[in-house]
Each structure stands twice: as structure tokens, then as C-alpha cells.
Length: 341
Ligand code: PHE
Image (tube, rainbow, N blue to C red; front, side, top):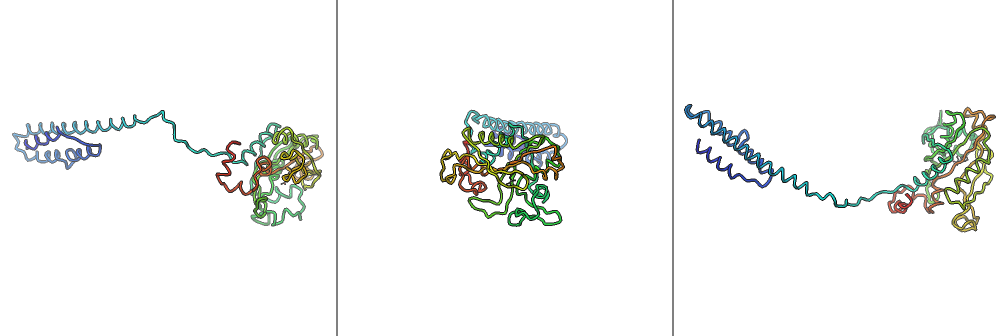
């Protein structure tokens, strides 16, 4: 037994390992339950009583020595791992990561909202899945109005309360008027849906910003000034506006607004079809029937409303030829707007 103890001691003195895994192997070889030293401990039971004292001491020494040696090896590898971590060059420039850019429709929407916020308008939002009342009936649409036709509107369920995808964000205006007494001054951005064949010039969904102002003594002149200010902020100080009489069920009188074509400066070109003007929005004085339907006294209050497509404004600013590009998510298209972010 003494011999075995000495032999193991010698081995331990010259112990070497190439890595932490090898150290673990050595620990198993000597110190685990079935390791060489544990086996010696087992043998120790059958040693004659008079040798027990001496051998016991030696065995304990051996075990301590083995633990010491293996721990020392273990530590040397741990220190090496620390050194490897310290080798990282913290001053090196990071690997470049491609950064995305804002979608042009978001950029233009934010610009529009910022301009109206500057004139005291707050933002109001509402559901895209709506009912007939908020999209049509409350807004003075006659029962047989063509917009209520399946060909124009996506219906989700018909009768008793028709459920549909909103065709304009005027529905948000109704929701706000129902809950709030004037003064009301809001802009309603959001996605709207119309049942149209998808082409370069039409899509089954697009985005709008609509506005509503209701207070005492609101006049058409107020509307005109707000829209003129918006046009100049959006398209430049040289921009002119022109209002043409039009018709919407929810406004009376109603108008459509054109801005001077900034491609030809109003002289007439292919873009404005030779007229010098391009249409950008619909507007008018809120019909008293709409105010009454929403619980607002039309003898006390009056108001104006306007609505425009964000795609249309974006096209005028950036000349996007095909509407479909806005929703195809082709990064090459989106990258063109990085500077506009
Ligand atoms: N709601 C109309 C549309 O979707 C736009 C509009 C809003 C017109 C307000 C007049 C007044 O086309």
C-alpha cells in the first residue's frame, strides 16, 4: 500500500494538462468516488490495526496533495480564460449594421400632423372595422348612396347592424362628436378601405388625414385660411390654392381644393394635364344634419371638415408613379427615402 501511495504521489508531482477538460479527467481519475485514491481508502479497511495510524495519515496527506494539485491546474486555466477575455479590443469600430428608414407615408403623415398640431389640432384615432352608423348614416348618406354598395365598400356582415371596413376616417369625427361638446379641433389619420381593382392609380386600401373644427361662429373663411397655411407649409411658400364647388353628403357647401402644380409652376404640363392645378383634398362646412345626429346643437355651433389621402400628398411631393410600390415593401424603393427621414 505504501508503494501505491508513493507511486501516485510521484504521478501527482508531475501532473500536466493541456486544458480545463483534461484537468477534469484527472480529477475523475484520482479523486472521484471510483478514483484511485478512493480505491486505496477502501483497501485501508483491511489494513492490520498496528499500521492504520501511519497509513491513515499518509492516505490523508495524499488526498490533500491531489486536491491541491488539481485545484492549482484548474486555476491556471481559469486565469488563461480571463486573459483571453482581456484580449478583446474595446476600441475597435463596430461592424456596421444596416439601419432601416421611415416609410415615406409615415414621414409625410408626420409632416401633415405636425403642421396641423401647430394650428391647435389634436390627433384622434378610431377603429378600422366600423358600423354603418359611424361611416354612413350619421354623416347624412342617403340610404341609396352608391358608397354603400358592395362594389365600393367591403362589408364584413350585413344586418342587423352592418359591419364594414371604414371607407374614410370621417367615422372618427362622428365618434368624437358623439362624446364631446365643442370646441372640437381634431385631425384623424388612419387607413381606409375601398373595393377597387388594384392598379398603379388605385388600391383597395390607402391612408387619410381628415380634419374637423367645430365651435361658435366658424366660417368658410376660417377653413380657407387653414388650408392655405397647410398648403404653403407642405409644398412651399410659393404654393397657391383654388377651391372648386363640389358635393359631399356631410358638408354644405362642399368644395375640392387644388394646389398650383409645382412641377411647371402653374404654366401647365403633363403632370397637371395642362391645367396648372392638381387636386389634393375635399372639404366643406359640416352639414347641420351631421351635427344634430351627433348631439351637437346646430343653431349654436358650426364647423368645417376636410379630408385628404396621404398617398396623394406623398405622390405630389416625391412623384411616386405606382401606388402599389407603397405596400410592396421593396427595400430598394424604401432606401430612396432615407434622406427624407
Ligand atoms: N370623407 C371624404 C372622403 O373620404 C373627404 C372629406 C372629408 C370631404 C371632409 C369633405 C369634408 O373622400
